Image (tube, rainbow, N blue to C red; front, side, top):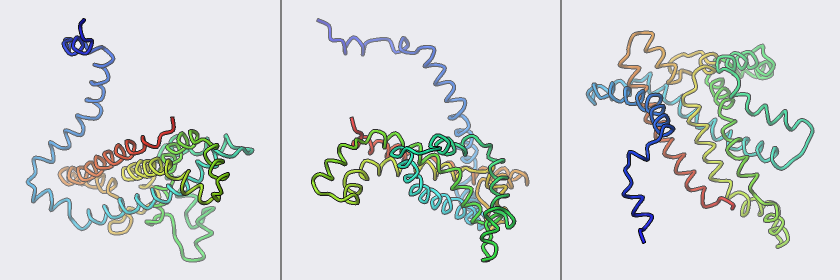
Length: 280
């Protein structure tokens, strides 16, 4: 009898290629691979010493600091509050729950420029929230703190939406069993609930961090875009293009691309790590 695996291995590879497969690959190549390859190719035209000189200019280093540090802080804060929001939306029933759940997707629905305009209005010195901090000398809009607020806003849905499916799969019977064995609510959370949630939390934080790194529309409006103050790397790229400094824009864009690729590997690792905690 012929082994099915042997017959499959001898199948002409060309017969495996179908129209949906060809369309999928072509679309991904045109939309994702070619632009990234073009950026790599442009960067390779520079000598490493020149690339390093442009990438490590003081204004670029300051922009990296504002971008990466602020994005990481926003991702971590959203990791805490996003977990709390996801827990409430999954475990509690209350009036207005659907409205609150829909509000979580607001950063997805709003154009980034509109989000920036709204945030700048609300957090300005005369805004609804900004006026509460102004008497204490705390200025939010048009500072690095405003950049942080904008990144918090756009990164939150990634944490909440990553955690919700995991929370929905957790069986309450496991928690009740822990309680029946004498565990307190805190011990149950730390030993029973938190371990399977940790990979999803880290994945959500990584997704939010990666999204915040590339944010432009909302940040460019709520910040003053002053170098060595609150200038982020995506805005610096745009400024370089306005100055017809295509080489400088390419180098800074290449740095952001490398960081994004690293974050992609981190996210994939966290997702694979989380599979062992998946509840069947």
